[in-house]
Image (cartoon, protein in one colour):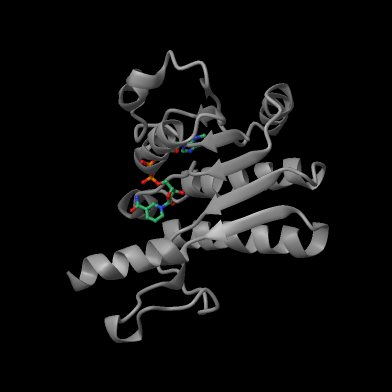
Length: 190
Ligand SMILES: NC(=O)c1ccc[n+]([C@@H]2O[C@H](COP(=O)([O-])OP(=O)(O)OC[C@H]3O[C@@H](n4cnc5c(N)ncnc54)[C@H](O)[C@@H]3O)[C@@H](O)[C@H]2O)c1
């Protein structure tokens, strides 16, 4: 597997990269990240000389550059962690959330549209379901989308675009959010 991890210099992405490189010998990994304020490349310093790992600084909305990298590295799978992720910042200025979280996913989907074998895992969030009363937990993936912040709305919009591209163009993509929801419920209960 040749894996593209987007947003791999962020909190979850960097931990995921460490996990993958430790657990699997046969995966090569390309990390593409715009390096916003949220990125921390130092957290990946210990693997920067690993021959299976490459880092490239790029905004995922730069579709042509991203497409070239995907072809150059023979990428077979993409996991999209790249996003603006802090709710409070989205309340101050939602535009950058629209840029990275919606246009960024559009960029990936446009690339997938012409590459039927390329598979995308879009990382979503439980926040697309809005405020979930504990008594109603766990919610299923078919629960109505009810985002209550610009951040959550941008992630829900991305989910809907992934759904639409799967249905309309038969792109090879899946969305994850339920497991994160379950983890959040466990945290709430403990
Ligand atoms: N942290 C959580 O509690 C949580 C919960 C549920 C879902 N998520 C989702 O998981 C994913 C990762 O979250 P995180 O907490 O690691 O976020 P983070 O903010 O720590 O990291 C995001 C990374 O994405 C990069 N990035 C942002 N815009 C980019 C762009 N246009 N092009 C390329 N790179 C870009 C940033 O530089 C950063 O390194 C996000 O999609 C988020 O919505 C996070």
